[in-house]
Length: 184
Image 1 (cartoon, one colour):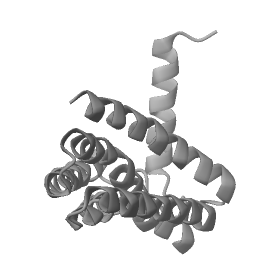
Image 2: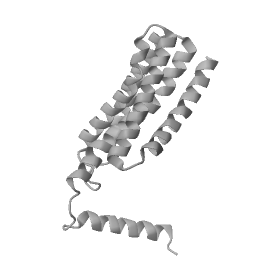
Image 3: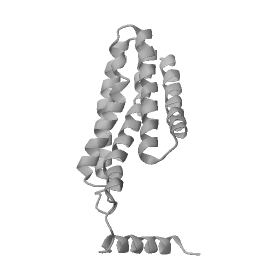
Image 4: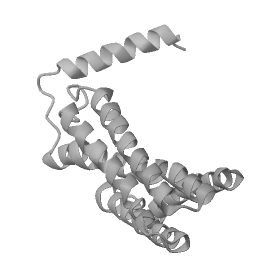
């Protein structure tokens, strides 16, 4: 049985050997596309679609003012997009992982996050509270189906399994935000 220090030394040696291996073949074009473009976009879209639900719906339920919920959602989408762009861009240089240019990945993730967050924010431009909520819920359903399709199409994940996983995350967030918003 190896100690933690021995395991770390072995892993460090293995990763150094792999990084220095001159014969290592570069990833295929399809793998590079997945790692450098699709995966960062998917991360951003999922984060934007899910993480922005709580503030938007908490504000909507607390105030019953779609206009206020719109600005909360817009600010959240912008902030989340910037945060995720930096998080992805600073997470690794791409040299060892083959994930490509960190600035490109960060930009893709940031735009994906903003897009995922702002899409279900736009219905709150509708001045009627109930109509805005219904259109926002329909937009969220569209987002969930789209995310499940992207996972199915590019990552060989079953559509139903992807839809169920993403919907579960959204339902947990929506339930918490509704509870918080109802208290306010």
